Every structure is written in C-alpha cells, then in structure tokens.
Length: 436
Ligand code: GLU
Image 1: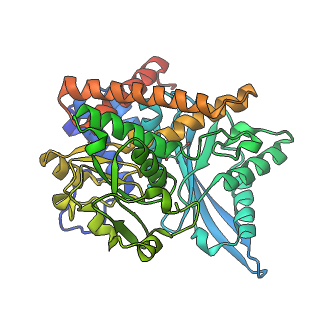
Image 2: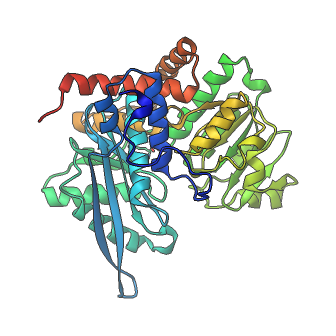
Image 3: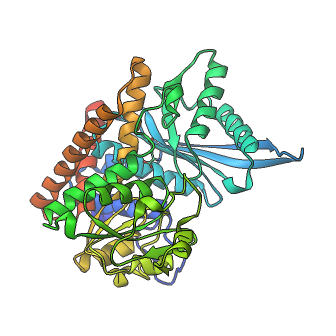
C-alpha cells in the first residue's frame, strides 16, 4: 500500500472549516505520516506506531485539607516499548487529556530513539491545576496516583519523570509510595528525583542544557558566531532559564525572555542571571522590567521578534498557522514539547526558517534520566562533570546523525530526526517480529 493510501483512523487532512486547535495527537500522527513518506517503513509497522500499546486511565480520590473529597482523573499512555521500557514524564495540568498523553508519548518514543537510548515512549498526567493544591494535597494525590498505577510502572516496565507541574519532590513521593508497596527501596522506578535518594546530578538542568548545546551546534553549522547571535526565549522554567543562562555564558545575546505574565526585552541583551527562573521564584520575569528600564512585551510579540534564534520553551501549540507567517527568526529551536503545529511547520519550511525539533533539542532531559536510571540500577553515582561530559557527547552524536539525514535527503531537521528515530524503531520491530 502506498503511504498516501494508508488507512486513517484519525483524519490526517485538516478541515479548514474546523477552527479547533490542533491536538498533540493530531500533530504527532501527521508528523508520523509525513516521516513515513521519507522512509521505506513497512506499512504494518507504520500503522502499529500510529496507536499506543495501552492507555491506563484511573480516578484518584483526594482528601482536601478542609476534609472534603475530590476525585481527579489520571492517565498513563504507553506508546511503544520495542527498544526498552516505557519512559516519559508525568504532568499535572488542567488541560491534560487522554489524547494529549498519547501524542506526547509518541514524541517520547521518537525522542528516545533519536538519542539511541534503550527506552520506549510514555506520558502521563493528572487533570489538575497544581497551583490549586497545597503541598500536602499534592503529596496525597501523587501517592494515591502511584498506587493506582502500581502495576503498570516499574524500573523495567515504565519509568516516569518530571514534566509540566511536577518536580523532583513529586518524583520522590512517587518513588517512596512505590517502594513502600514493594517492600524494598526501588529508586529506578522514577527519574528526576532529588540526588539524596538516587537522583542524578545535572538532571534538572539537562533539558535546558541540551537546548543550548543544539543551538550552539546549529549556529555553528549555519555560520552564526554565538558572539553575534541574538536569542529570544519563551518560558523561563527549567528549560528556558537554563538554556538562556548557558547561551549567555557561551557568548550569545539573549534579548528577550518571558513567563506567563509576559516578556521582557532589551535589544542590547538582558542580564539573564539577574532574572529569577520559575523554580527560583515563580512568575517573576516581568518584575525585572519594573526594577530596570527594559521594555515589556506580550508573549505573542516575543514570538515575532527579529532575532537569529527563537526558542519556544513554555507550552505546546504556540507557533500556529495564525502566527507562523510573522515569525522573524532564522532558526527555531523547540525547547517545549510540540510548540509548532503541523500547519505552522509547513509555513516555516516554505519560508526557509530552520526548525530544530523538540525530539532532539530538549532530549537532554530524558538522556540524563537514562544516566540516572543507570546509576540507580548499578548503585553507583556519577559526578556532575561526568554527566555533563556524557550529555555533551550524546547530544553532539545525535545532532550529527540528524544532520547527516538533513544533508543526504535534503529534508527538514524534523524530518531528519524522524528518519533517524523511525529507522531504529522499525528495525527493532522487524527483528522482533509480531507475536501472533
Ligand atoms: N518530561 C521530559 C520530556 O518531555 C523528560 C522525560 C523523562 O526524563 O523521562 O522529555
């Protein structure tokens, strides 16, 4: 069957009259279909990869601090495990849906394969606004969710990690709840834990570090000396803030950063070290504008700044068909998962703007998660220097593998990354075969 005749269980062609925003699952499936046409993948494997292996849905009762009980919905989507245990984050966010978890789980499968990590892809979450929970409530919710998911996670089965709305402390509660039920301490059930209980040095800053490394390599490739490169970064959480600080350290000029309240902008360059990251002080970016004389912008304006590199590192779906025409950067490096819709990607490609995809750019997070998991199962600790060295080498190797495909096939960076990932996954599926 030719790739354009593949059965489509979810419409791949967008109905222009349908103004609903593109979901993560739609974007992920369209990207997969497009990548399939760049690569000779067996149709049966392609069809298999369009669907998750399993999606676990649970209800999680929580006793609130006032004694009342509220019930939340939680998911864990397990997409593919042909190359190893499922791996991926756990997000606490009011917009979490089943389909979003499936789309994000698909991206985790590709991300682990681009990096050649022995993991598959998963993503989970609870439909809850974490800002509405006290610390005690968050702990109870996490422990009960872990109990509900106990049979489907595990160090050789499915290994959660932090994502939007969760942090090392959340992972510590998860690890403790799981270990208590199993009657033994099992640090490898989760990554992104605090180092005191088996977490890795350098894990929290790793996604931002990989964004910076990939930006540095891409700028060198297109002959933009970092000392003459301007960067705008949307989002000042662990990805955006760490990327901004490293890029500044390496000589780039970071002209704009933002959080949910808006952006600060100085064409001469911001002092990013003086702006508190979300982890240091939530939502404090625009306060910096009050204390200095830098300009304030909206998040929408930041995306349209005339800069060399734009890093969307906040939420998904921010570059859409409505604003892709107005993007004025030469290079987009995706710090968030799924910041560019399929339609926006086509517009950016047409306009000659290079987009370095999320599954490569922010893959430092899951790569150091892999280092953490190795440390846990080997009961051996790595130094921060070792983590940085190994991450640097893994990122440059993956970036080069993608660059080779970009050059040889004359495709976009996203297509190049999909070719690297899908050829590894398809080969593993072919060799393992389909069990009747
Ligand atoms: N949530 C992160 C991501 O989207 C990390 C996943 C992990 O470390 O397993 O890549």
